[in-house]
Amino acid sequence: MTIALNSPVAPNIAQLTKYLEQVNESGHYTNFGPLHHELTRRLEEYLGVKNLLLISNGTLALQVAYKVLGITSAITTPFSFVATTSSLLWQGVECQFCDIDRSTYNLSPAKVKERLFNNSNVNGIVATHVYGNPCDVEEFANLASKHDVKVVYDAAHAFGIKVGEQSILNFGDASILSFHATKVFHTVEGGAIVFKRTEDYEKAKQLINFAICNGEITDVGINAKLNEYQCAVGLTILDDMDNIVTHRAELFSLYQDNLAGLVGFPQWHSLANTNGAYLPICLNSEDELASVAAELSKNGIQYRPYFKPSLDSVFPQVKHGNLEVSRDISSRVLCLPLHFKLTRVDVLKVTSTVKKGLLCHAQ
Ligand SMILES: *Cc1c(COP(=O)(O)O)cnc(C)c1O
Image 1 (cartoon, helix red, strand yellow):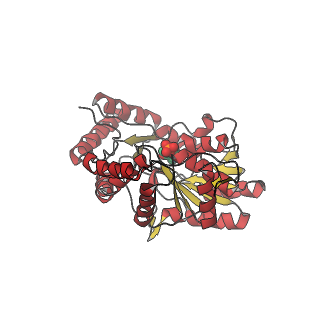
Image 2 (image 1 turned 180 degrees about the vertical axis):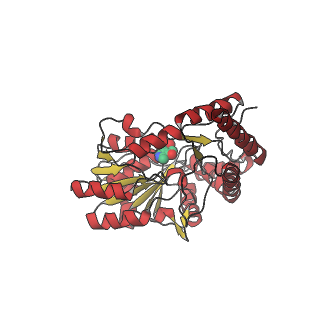
Image 3 (image 1 turned 60 degrees about the vertical axis):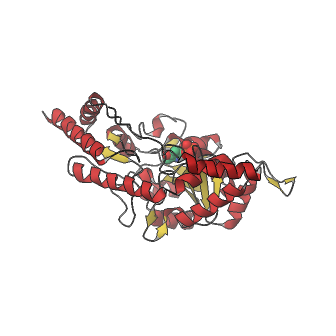
């Protein structure tokens, strides 16, 4: 029996059908229909945010956010999913990488600060809450006000994450979510932008519908709307969200308890909750990783070196300084299975297999 790395949440068909029947009744299949309205309202309530705009996927959400905020030159992280950087390049934004923090694996504000002093044309910071672990949002807010730059958070992993009582999505000028099938919450494909300012939200809402406003074309727009069928999937899954997150977060801590002291974990923000989006472990060396990976494969357990490689090796055209931490962590990190269908027994099997791999390497 294989243990899958990930397994999308399957929407309850009976409930999904009820929503789809509503679509047929309304005759409104896309373009901000009734289910779009309902999902927006319910997500804003669930997440504790305002100005949430649904988008057809997380990558376009990033691109639309840069466009609306006027970001033309950005500092970003090489330790993220490829879309964080490729969205900038596709959008024609000049960009540079800064290194990550060795304990959190998130973009390092100290490194960004050094670069900002030497680059007066930079007007944006694009940082990822890696694995859902919040960035140092206070420090980025200080840098942003001091240097007059916009901050966009790639919060694709951070559904439902809070710092204290505050949603992580309420920091920065905009945060984006991905609702891809592999994420904690999904609409098959989909995403959202949460804007700090209502004007930005209003502008983005026009832009993603060809920039049509009251029948007039007001700008160069795009089509990035989320349709009613996908909103139906979202509404169905949202009904079960507390169960999903509780289950994932429980497995996340079971893993951490079982592997404590044996492997490294990113240091979690002290005031933040967890959503069990990913289970990254950091091994002591590439050799140790190879030994653990071989043992996992032998036992039919899927894993993924995530994020590997450090994105500077994928995009040599992006300028950067020293990225030794990102390169080092990328070469030693591995994500283990974690999803809604995974059981506690599965987790114990995975952790004992990891331990076997560690032993093989030690011998
Ligand atoms: C999934 C993901 C994206 C892209 O989202 P899509 O909805 O698949 O376009 C962007 N950034 C990060 C960090 C992601 O994990």
